[in-house]
Amino acid sequence: MPLTQDLFFASHLASQMLDHTNDGINVVDTNGVLVYVNNISANYVNQTRENMIGKHISHFYPDAVLLTVLENQRPVLDKKIHLVPPNKYVVNSYPIFLDGVFMGAYSIFQDVQEIDRLNSKIKHLEMQVSLSKPEADYQHVVHMGTMQNIYKQAKKIVGSLGGPRHSIITGESGTGKTMLANLIYNYAKEIGVISKNAPFIEINCAQFTNPDIAAMEIFGSVEGAYTGSKKRKGLFEQANGGILFLDEAHTIENYQNLLLKAIESGKIRRIGDTKEIDINVIVIAASTKNLHEVFLPELYQRLGQYEMHLPALRERSLEEKENLFRHFVTKYENAVWEARHIQYHVLFTPEAKYAILHAVYPRNIRQMRDVINYSIDASSPLIEDIGEKTEITTVVETKHIPFDVSEHTPAQSSASHTATEKPTPKTNIITEEIAEQIRQAYQKGYGARKIAHHLEEMGFYIPYYKVAYFLKKDCSSKN
Image (tube, rainbow, N blue to C red; front, side, top):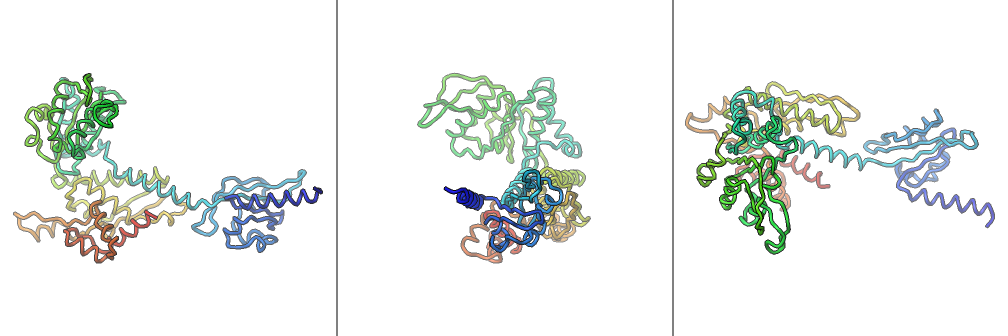
């Protein structure tokens, strides 16, 4: 094959290969005139290669990194630029030298918009998980008011001279039972009662609807104990040397005897096994019920050596509520910094703060946290509007709070109810239960107004515009 044919073939092959990459490629001469463009690059700017070649690159890419390379004759690597928002590209540009003579430059670039979008979603999910996960450290909150005495009592569970004891924590849903159990766990590690690496095993006992499954989960099993069974550790073995936290403990009536035997003997036996295993576990049982009325007397006596009751949020002082308020706002600001490295300053107007502190929260601290997070979300700018800012301040007003402020002020409550009546708070928060009702109604073809009316008939008072906003977010998160 003649040399000219070899060169033609090599050039044609190279062009085909460059057109089948996932990257855009531009090549310019020393004047910035395009001498080669692959199909990916042409498609990015809705042009054809024939129309682009021979023209200055700035006609198509006004902020081209190649212009910097032509000026400095040095490569520019991993430069992230916007072409036409929201399109974003990562560009690597290099100078071209032939026998030491500068001949031009070329760029290889890739659209990273989808990658950025996925990263943004991941960061958002991480932040939401961080904001909603159970509190492990309330040290700066519990040292005031009613919680101060409870925390002192909690310390005695593991810190008394007689050694650690089992305990019971009762209180309404959302009052901080898991938080208190975590405080006990951290304090036990701090004073050396358990090791720094000791486990904290939490289980919701309400999930055990079958007593056989419950026994297997708690005590483990050996292979062949029943059809399909495998060798596995139970919760007691997993918690050995640490703390086993039994949430919703009032639901364990089917296997109280097994639990009592393990606590009394300090030994467990896997289901289907004949060998006993020594365990050293501190058991903390938590419940919204009075366990004295639910447990066997012997089990209650063993677990109730220390019993603590957490008051509802409505029973706590304004000072405690303000501490919680500051804690959740600071936690939100810290979560933004960890997720996006943005210094986020959240301010509440006096009216908004008053409304938050004096609202009725049937789900207690957990609901107060959710309302604060929702309110900050509603006042925050969209990610796409932030740009390259590294410091942002947002102001939360009463319009951002997910309930009608007037419904929750003490003045109206006292005016609308007699001294013997307790006001029935409206459910204005879209819980997971309500969210599922909205989705089902939407799948039936209902609009936002009809769904809101349907919810009101069920006793949920969610305005239609909140339903519409939820549907918009819910649908976009699935796309």
